[in-house]
Length: 390
Image (cartoon, rainbow, N blue to C red):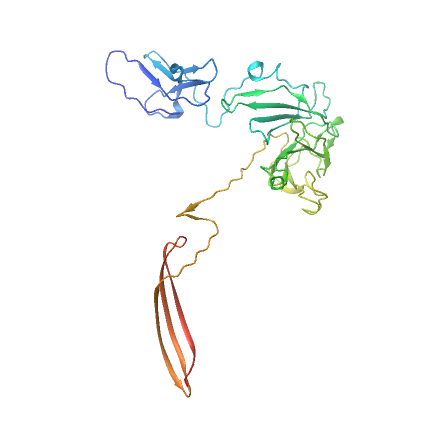
């Protein structure tokens, strides 16, 4: 937070400046920054002091000194220690010890490199998340067909996280593989799941990667999230058309996407989840099936990429309900009768037993309803006809 500028009195005696602030929920400490000159801007801020609440979350009500800094004129700033820019993740630290883990050191049970990692929130428990490590190669270079999962529990009051030790998954892939892609499909990125009878379902699709001997296995398998964080038995579904390894993946709007991968490849592909048999065409069943001959080309990218970084980002669904004057801004209809004025000017031309009629008509009415507020309506008409006289 940025505090207002304090104008100090012009006096020779020493001044002790005491800075206090309101607590920030769940803060474990505070850093206080100061600009070297007045009005020099936030980008020039330098660290003046740091307060750490050793007992955990700061409680400025019980201990006001945790939200207070005194400067008697001797404090100096630390050059080069500037505030973290927006979006920073803070200081990295090892996740180990009793404070963060339930037991031991939170290391993977098996050393893995070139594996795929994903994280999901448990649909029925917003305080529980699961971390996964799929496949990869172990310390000896052997390709792995296993996965591991670790549960993360978030304290809703303090936002403190407890990470359980990694546990081996109960099922294995059809072949060991590394440099693979993993998609996660749930109600946030799949309307098929969201509108189904089981909207809390979460499916993992584990795809193409490099396997024993350096060859590529392009098969795709699916596993469903279970209540304890493990996955059900993997189910085979449509394979990728291209032999890809080191690919980037993404998922949105019932679609699975691939980007790059395999040295020299720049194009991307996409495949649509099956909602039911024949929907879309080529489907032999519902989720987790994909249509036969899935993964159509998205075209070539400008740059060839392999071993790229990627992350799954959800485009959040938002429903906006607005109203004004007691009426919704959605589809609406209003009927009313309003008094107005009508003018007509015409002439009759007598032709035997009748007369030829020509008439110019003008109408006007003011409107002031819920939907059509302060407006008006009018009409212009021309009547031509024959008037029968008896």
